[in-house]
Each structure stands twice: as structure tokens, then as C-alpha cells.
Image (cartoon, rainbow, N blue to C red; front, side):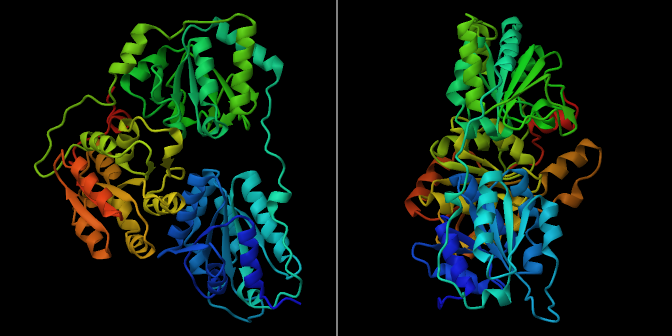
Length: 554
């Protein structure tokens, strides 16, 4: 018989699954397992200050590495705190395993007892309860198997009294990697490929849109080749941003974040092909972005209806890269080569395009957030990972950042929740380990989980945080103004976020004039630690997407 307790054996099983970093906040029901994890060779344990943040950190880690992120919470109120983080991970198809300590099975009464299953399942996560010693290791393997195979979060519930029991068997664990099916690239139906070739042959102004699936499939070169063959322009969904950066015929993001010139080109398009993208409400502006175009979706999970919309006229079930390569080969075999949108005039228009031309009067002591974003983008090297939270500034960041590879963007807006950028950035920074991580976040979002600045200092996390500080909840400020209401109830003042950061032991600097960022970045690099820039922005500057959506500006 082994002298290990179940908590020890479960820790070893997690390590056998490839877990190298654990994000946790300890309580009665998970502290012994977390401590056992910390004793394993090579294991890094990051202790968060809020359970939501522990899971959001694991989410960021998984997005940055492609591995299964691992987080842990205690039972009851520790577990209920993570509902938002689980929902975000589920909607973003992020593989996570959450070790959720559960209340003791043998106690007649326990104040923190709650039924975890419906809560976890309500977020879209899978739920696996460990309730016997015999099945415990099988349950761990199943959790990692589902997380990887289905790309979703899994909650593994483990009663605290069971964890303390001696493990009665010889330690012997078979990891999920031994049973996972080999990754495959579904090939398209040749008959549907021929239908699409016919549509391309007739089209005069086609556009390809690449999404998260195209990024994960490595379809960039294949899509560029198809665009060249078919005369198409290139664009991305929000989650595919950067996929075609630098291509002279790339329009950046399609939909709500498109530039005015890109919207003109989309409006004239007669064929739109979505590759590894959902073609939902934001990407298509609820179908109004390209009203005269036929639409095609190439995806491993094509949907006829998505977010209440008809997605396409033709659906092709295929891996993004394989599907696009098959279409290009068929075009070449038939001798179809189109000029389409690929003219010198269009290339010139794209090269001269800017996200937003409108001028605003800027109050003293503040900066135009659009110009600040351009300066920030120029100051921070293009090989850095960029984590972007949610809020009004988000539309400015996503439309003004340029020249970065798609895998360098980590956008955590999948559930429409703010407050997730900071913990996600900590997860990405833990994954990278080189300090080359930039967080762009809003002041209201930062204040939701500002306690994690202490985690950054204590754990020695290196990253740079640029806080776009308009002194309130910017989205609500502009929506109130657009509706003729006073925004006073959502304006809380800028405060001294740099001072707060310094109080936590993180280097804080106030930025209230343009031109300082290059010098500040050199200082940040020399300090080799975490830094926070409190960028004071004028709250009257409305992003181009907000002016279009909320103010009715054409």
C-alpha cells in the first residue's frame, strides 16, 4: 500500500498531465492538494488574491500556450466566485481544469456546502465529481481528456475528507495523452468545393474573413494564396486580428471595428468567404456589412444559424487550412485566376487608410486616447504579447494596434465582462516568463481586481500595464451622452492609480502628455520588473465604433 494520501496522488496525476503552473487561492477544501502541488519538482504555484482571478489567470495561460490551464478554488463561496471566469473560458473554447475542493461527504452539516454541478454546467463547463478512491485517477484523466478534446473548461470536484484518506493502491497513472485521438484535419466535400469554385469564378469583388479557427489551423499562408488566386481582399474577425497584418490587401477587422474605407469595400462585395469564423453579429454587423454578397463558411463546426443570424448560403465542413488549400487547388486546376479587388487603386486606398480621422478638443492634463494608443504601439516591440480587456477603449485599441502577429493578441471579451484583463495578463506573463507582455486595460476594469497588483509583486511577475484612464466607466459615459443623459453617475474621477500601484510595490507612472512613452519604456526595460502607466485620457473622445453604433454617425 502507498503511504500517499489521495491529495498527494491527485497532485502527481496533474503533473503527469503536463501541468507546470497552478493558479490557486487556498481554503479548507483545496489547501492540502495545493500544498502537495507546490512540493512537486518544477511546479510553479501562483497564489491569487481572488478566486475569479485564479481561473482567469489559468485562462490567459492556456490561451498563450495552447496547454490546459489549471486553477483551484475551495468550496462554497470560493467556488461561486468563479462563475464569470468559467463562462468566459467556455465561450472562448479555452481548455481548463479547475480543481474545486468540495465540502466533506461525511459531515452532517457544513456551512460552505453548495451543489456545484448546476452552477458549473450553467456556465458551459463540464462537471466531474470525484466520489470514490477507485475512480479518482480515472476522473482526473477524463477531466484533462475532455478539456483538450472539446476545448472547454472542466470542474473536478473533490470532497475534502476524501482527499485526506490514504491512497490504497500502487501509484500508477496513465495520462490522457495516451488515449487522446490523433489530431486530424477534416477535408472538404469535393462537390461543395466545386460549387464554391463556381461562385468564385463569377464573383468580381470577393473578400475572405479569417477567424480564430483560421489562426489555430495555421491557415494564414493558404488564405493569402486563395486571395491571390481569386482576387479577394483579406479581413479578420476580432479574434483573428493580426492574421494578415502587412499584406497590402488586408482590411484588418471586419464588422463593427472596420474602418470607413473597409466598410465601403465590404458594401460593394459580391462574395464573402468566412474561414474558421462564426460570422456572427459583430463580424457581419448583423448582416448589414455586406448586404449584396453571397456568403460561404468553411469551418469544422459550420452553423446555419449563429447569434440569431443566418450565417451563410453555403457551408463547407472542413479544417480551415485544408479547406482553403482544396479550393485554391481546384481554382488552379480549372485555370481560374481573377483580378477582382486586387487593383493598384484599392491597394493605395488601404495603404492610406486610417482608423479614425475625426479631431476632438483635448482637455489640459489629458491625452487623446487614439494618439496615445498609436504612441504605445510604436514604443512596445512587436514581439510582445498584448492582452486587451473590455470597455470603451477596447474599440480604440483594436483599431489602432498594427504590425503584430495574430498569436500575440489575447482578447478576453468573450462574455462581454470587464475586469478580466489584469488576471489574464498575469497568466500570459507566467507562461512567457520573459516579461514581454503588455496589458491594455481600462481604469474601471483595473479597479475591479486591483488587489492582484500585490500578486504581481509577490510572485515576481514581469509585465507592463497601460491603463487607459478616462475617470469612469467609459462605455456607460458615452452611451449616456448619446442618449441625452448625464453621465455623472458613472464618472468616479481618475484618482492616483500610479500611486496605488507604487503602494503595492509595482512601479507606477502617470502619463498625461504625449511623447513620454518611448523614454518610459526604456526605463521599464531597465527596471526589469512590473510597471503600470496611468494614462489620463480625455473622456469626450468617442471611438469610431461607438460613434457609429450609439451616436448614429455614418
